[in-house]
Image 1 (tube, rainbow, N blue to C red):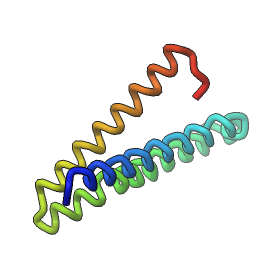
Image 2 (cartoon, rainbow, N blue to C red):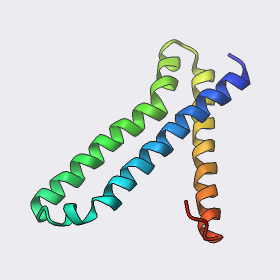
Image 3 (cartoon, rainbow, N blue to C red):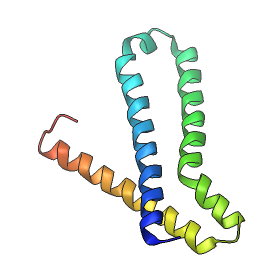
Amino acid sequence: MGILRIGAISFVQALALALYCWAVAWLLFSQGAALAQMGPTVGMIFFLLLFVISAIISASLVLGYPGYLVWAKRVGQGLKILALTVAWLVLFLALIGVGRVFELKL
């Protein structure tokens, strides 16, 4: 597997996770009033379940394919994809931070 393919796979994984985070943030922001009316117990259960589901989805997106590669005894490729995925996520975070500093509407 070439470095270009590894880079593409890691980019898609990071982009999918970033889009998932955006969707959850949009849901929480757009439904804030409805969530506030749930009551403290139901609201706490909702957020805990959302947290657990998000952890599972995030882990699947970031660790799924690298885990498969490690299982298939291609540890080096799996670790490279994992490292590049994290690097893409850090870059996305930095871009959001730069956008915030310059007050771009993201």
